[in-house]
Image (cartoon, rainbow, N blue to C red; front, side):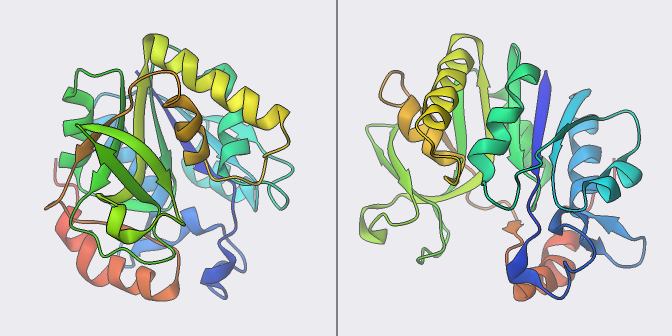
Length: 241
């Protein structure tokens, strides 16, 4: 089991908090100084995921200093002109067998990852059917138990829920995802979000979803998200074992 954390972006919408550090290094526990990405790495290790790669870009050296030499680092030197799809593309050589991929700005409960790792389907994205859906939300449409569309500009009335940015692909399904990433990058779509590859993937294979409604989580995009992560979400997801 392997994991890829997409952490190349600065998080300009979080300025001034990201003036000196990428948003993956924002502290969610101010008492201990624990950051979002440190929490993610700790969670992965607790769940038995030992091989972890992090795609870095903005202030990448800071992430390397914090996480240390046990992590595999993949540099995205073009982080300012690309998006998460391109970061995932750069991680293709690391993606083998069974892989979890997650955005490094998501703070979420251990039960979400445990449920994802116990799922026996080969291509699964996590979705929260209880989320409030707005123009910033990466919305997911489902039909007959399968994902049929995923994008921000989807009509909220058609959407089932919000994509968390925590997914798992394995076996042949992983190879199809990798081909989708290669295809989109060859077409110049380096500024797309990673979920654009899911839309390409579902043209060829079923894409399943895991509804994690009820579990606490948050994607940290704006200052108010950071405040909520510290005050409400971290105390609810704090790892005790």
